[in-house]
Amino acid sequence: MSVVNIDPGKTSKYGNIVSPGALAQNHQHIFAVRIDPAIDGHNNTVVQEESLPMPMNPETNPHGNGYEVVSTPIKTSTHIDASPFTNRTIKITNPHKLNSISSKPVGYKFIPSATQLLLADRNSIVAKRALFAQHHVWVTSYKDYEWYAGGEFTNMSQKEINGVADAAARKDNVEDTDVVVWNVFGLTHNPRVEDWPVMPMEKHEIHLRPADFFDRNPAINVAGSKNMSSVEVGRDGESCCNGSSANGHGEDGSVQAAPTSHLQGTDTIPVNGD
Image (cartoon, rainbow, N blue to C red; front, side):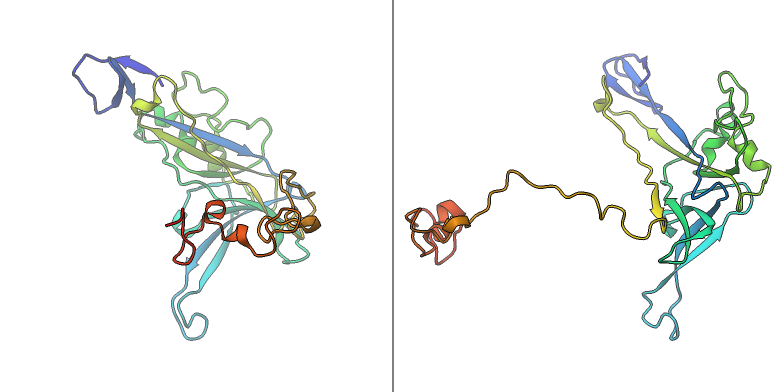
């Protein structure tokens, strides 16, 4: 965090006092991840998938518990916003390669996190130079050297130039071609005393996972592990519970019934002689 001085006894609605005389300002961290996919080849199509409620009807949803999955291919470069209420999912697919089990195009998918986007006024210099931070997902066509969501030169710039917003504005074809997907997410950081002087970790994950890409769970043939600390009970006639002639407890289950060793206490098995 970056702090500024503040007079004793004063507070500010623009931040929080994290140490005497130290005001940490409210701020945001906005990130963009560039995904340049090649799902079984470079000709890919991005599909927006949503799970939507279905009206109750006697033919297809008589009990009202059904819902439908609506898939919409993205045809021209554009932006997409997260929608947790519809479980909006971004799939990157290869329409020319079908899964042998589902007969659907092979692909990978992720669900964009509904994190807060840029709060700066749209007319501010901050917002003009960070147009990428206004949407959660961008879909653009691949172009050499288009690597930076905010454009190549951001330091001291007055507006975003040759960034992802300019790429999307071209309205290029992004269906069945070489595409790039940009995932934008952020953290609105309203400081707390516990963030000072060393701020704890903030974690964000992008779960990019196969969607009908494999013909089975790829983890099935992962070698199993053995718990070397486990001890087999009852081998060679030994048993902690049933006892044996070797341990002197007999086959009467006395160890199993002992409340002090097995933490049992009921109306029929008293604890500590009560």
